[in-house]
Length: 169
Image (cartoon, rainbow, N blue to C red; front, side, top):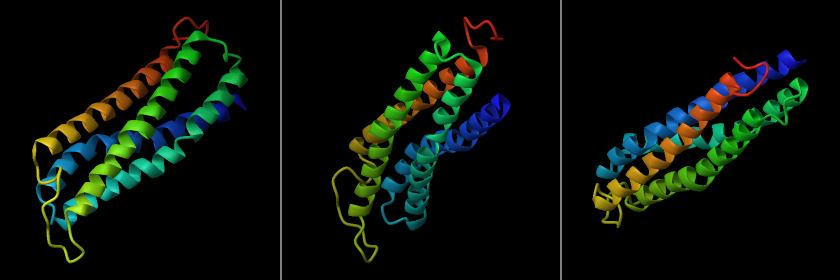
């Protein structure tokens, strides 16, 4: 049973977390492109798709810690320091994604939508059009995304190396 739980945990991490890290990393550059040309329907569609990938796969990512905990219980390592640190970092990564990355992606999309009338004509709107605020906003979004990705990288290393574990590498 442990092998099954571990396999599902690893597959879920690859399938759910991987797309979020890639799409979230692509979003700031795509946002700069879309905000510099508010009437560009294709750029806006790319941005919406990246945000949707982040939202959907973030929700699917809940499976990762669930099967991770089941695997840890099966292995009898729930009290190991490397696992506790990994769980804390996973919680931080989820908080960064849910509290910093996704809301800011949504705000960028809302700003893009407000800059475009229903007939596709652009109107002046604050925080759009490639100004300093847009660069600052997308730079912060890139920073938060980098924090999210770094947290997951550290968790991955901890899961592989399992420092201090008698069964570690």
